[in-house]
Length: 301
Image 1: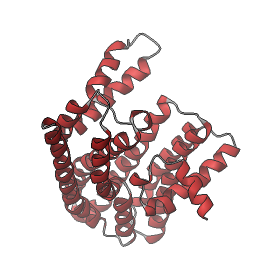
Image 2 (image 1 turned 90 degrees about the vertical axis):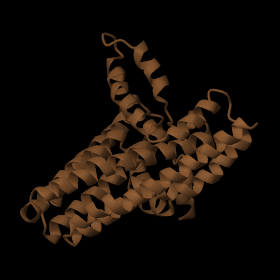
Image 3 (image 1 turned 135 degrees about the vertical axis):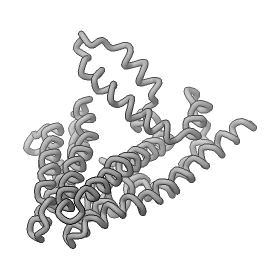
Image 4 (image 1 turned 30 degrees about the vertical axis):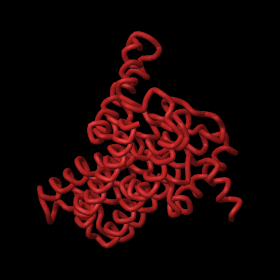
């Protein structure tokens, strides 16, 4: 078992951004599926597409209130998440990393939850009416999106300080804009330009939520980051990673499973709109203070 876990860790970017639960119940099954797909010579993009179909299909069963339908819904979403992990692990195993693969991988979870929130709102309609849709819109299209965006940004920032730019996926909007402007719609790069059009807006939302972080990066970059600053940031950022994990998938999906099986999905919306929002605001305040402290320290050096 220990050898298996070591192999799984070798396909992960950093243990700091992956919790024990995720290692055992998400990354390890994903790794085993990735090995299976590698034997069959399945391309990572095909695995991603299967995960999108499975996750979206789970919404059909989340609409229903009977136990069997909800067990099917939960099972489909669990497998979809395994496949969503497997595609990236498979790409790293085989060296089949592509731009469209990265786009689809990030797109998969958004598609799942778009369908699932509609399904949960439909499920609440007979008793909650329009209030079920309003609650779902607040939880899903305001809280969830901002929570996931912030957590994703902080995880990538942690990896940037820990591993460097080549092994992280931290992007800055002004650099993306330069790349976007250099491309032409009439060229073969039209798809990359289209992707950048939407990705720049995604990155801008992250940057608008983290003004002190942007001040720190403006001071530090593009020069090499001093090793003591790098160590301080990683050391103080590491305890915040469990909160990031809670805002991305683990805790959120566990509550979704439980409330769906107990047929109290309105509790899931309230949990997301209250509990996860509290985690969101506390995480952002702590992280912004960390960035402000480093910026202040750099100003006095």
